[in-house]
Image 1 (cartoon, chains in turn yellow, green):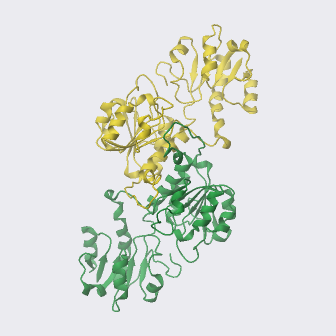
Image 2 (tube, one colour):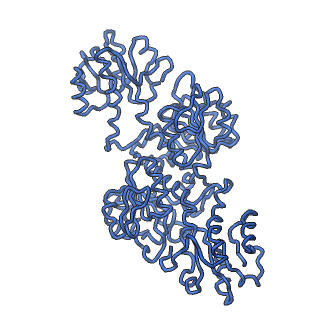
Image 3 (cartoon, chains in turn cyan, orange):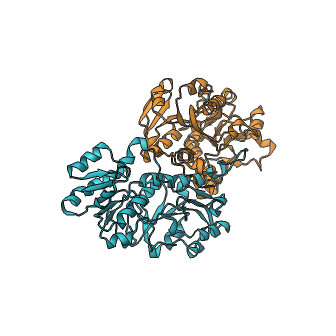
Length: 313
Length: 313
């Protein structure tokens, strides 16, 4: 059984795979004749991916994505060909949650004023985390990690998910169809929604019309979930004071894009997942593959992190 | 008994004081004839303070400072006149600790690059809090609050105090005379020392010579504890990568001061204590006065927060 290692495997990883009769090729070493033989793609590379999917005799059965969101994969096509996608939901929850706290503290502790100030002019319009209740859309691994950090600062944090079922670390969770009570109590909104047809343009003009004076709007979900013009209008007429966006539409943003031109908006250019690769956690992706290998090899089944290709997450 | 309320008292506070026979005057309403009658100063105002201290028949016995550090008071003079100073150690521990975390996340999560970036150029040299061990000089209320937050991020935090006695929330505490082992393990140093003759210029050229490549130096103690030229040299030859200073010498810093001119240095202009006054915690100073009032009125003694006027804290 052939595995394409788009992401790096160490010796230990390779030994584990060998035990299950899995051979490894990499994008650098693969021969044209092997394209159709690939059964597992460990990580996804758009160029080779397309070669695989357009090959009529492809044996591809499983893609282990390197991310939590999988909206960049051709989900309908994969479904039609009966290819399973497993995601890496939770792999980047820790760095992303720390970036969300960095945004909150940046604006709450006045750093946005001091970052560019080159003369003495104290700025004291500051807040404790506990003075700014937070509403997080999306209560999966990333949302829960955000909530945990906010609680450790003594803060208040509400969540929103599809059904409104309660989730650890949140003071209360609301349903997507019924979030208004939570919104009325919040000074900070975190968009942590996956990119699906349901969430497309969810944060639109009507959403921002509900704002009186929101302190901070954060997007660490997907750029498609936010109507950026609606946000810009809300910023310009002070219904939203500040915004911090890790994801945008498009990426990269073109030069002179209006999002670059508002001093109230912080853009982190889709890098909220960053951590120091030298310290080991970067190898965490393999643990996602590893858990599913035994059942996949013996019976073609999966024990965790299978993506619903209709829902998209 | 007359109390000068430099800081605001609400009705409840005034009722409490009245029960103990304490009358209140404010800087706005005080008559010249009352200056010598003041027994308690609630908060300290330099101008009226000097009037009181130069009055030969002053009855001043107690100053409740509005801060943890009291180096701005004429301590030797107060000692000679047998005036007791109580501090507000802990009052601002929470906001100051949150500002320290804002500094750490600002540089660790790459915000210092994004704050001024107006084109698309992702910056991924990022760190988790757990990847940057911290050494905090000063393990009092502020230091402990900083340590608690770092632990909640899964981080490592060492402390330094006079004797090296262990303190809650720290992984290990070293003595001031023996901190080198802790320093060797740390990527971030927090100067949280009070301003005393012992700590004057503690972080000097010799201190910074020990650095190989420190990620971040933070000063939320007192400007006098840091030799700023030594820090600037360490920044300029990359022994220290970044610095975040809340306190400086002098304050305010003059225009064009070299600290303003280094992009690696963040200055927050002595406002790390900031919080939103509307939400109630600002009244916390009175709880410090309140605890000492009964014993002071009945026997002239104090139960907590008395400053050692020789040591200066």
